Image (tube, rainbow, N blue to C red):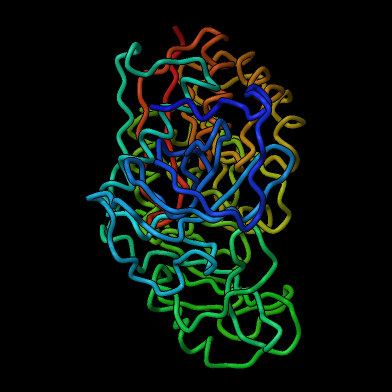
Length: 409
């Protein structure tokens, strides 16, 4: 794969492209962040709406410092993986939400696997093939990549209509529907309304068939508590509490994480960045009455939900605060699970959990760059990575959910 880590400042000075310029280029490789790499007279371009192997005409959309971005405006030689985007708003200059609707769905997964592999090699200094690992991106129902998203934040246009921001812009692309939203959300109905003010419209649906619509933290319609059922356990949460957006993500991730952790009765497990306790519910049942689950979370709303969910669980201890502050207070952990935000766990948290010397660490990540960086520190701390699987929980977009296991060497 072409090395997109090449920096423009490392290249000889040449006349720079400017916004509005159009040039023909060959698309070389995918880059983390929904772009593809191309070169023009020594300049590296980050391009949207292309596919590796294509020759395209692009128009420069921004030049910031030495980073040049462009959109495909004409496909000169198309990839066999190019398809007609199912959504009319998934186009250059349109909605910025879906990066890959123009790419056949199975090839989207191949590109995501390549991105993960490259990030581990470049940022983690880890060659997956040399470790005997291959990154697989598994499909999750619905496999066509449509009607999966259960949480949506809609921006409001100057004309009072819902929409999404255009790529790298504060301009709102009005929509009349959203094909990745679950049908239960009734986006078309929301789009038919006129909304006063500029506060976002937040919509959340649950696995039990509930829908809540809120603005500015105030519920407009639907229940103010949603019931999410995962593997037989019911989680009652606020509509604004973080919850996996893909309708099948909770069960998919819980099943895989529990398989990797191989929890035994009596184990002590740390659930870092535990949110409302999606994983803690399964962990609590697995460790039994003699085991313990330490759930660490800093979000006030998630903590409130977790307190209600686990009030009858004597084996679940909830720690309120930042992981880097609370983790050093824990004296023992047989197993550690962490599911950090996009920025990753970071060196302070990794070094703290390494001091506990758990036998197994399972890391759930929504960002391959921060995962690769943290994986480097974990393996340098005496652990071996023996499993990496990604799930396509954000189809049609550049986002990826990856689950990795580390065992104490």
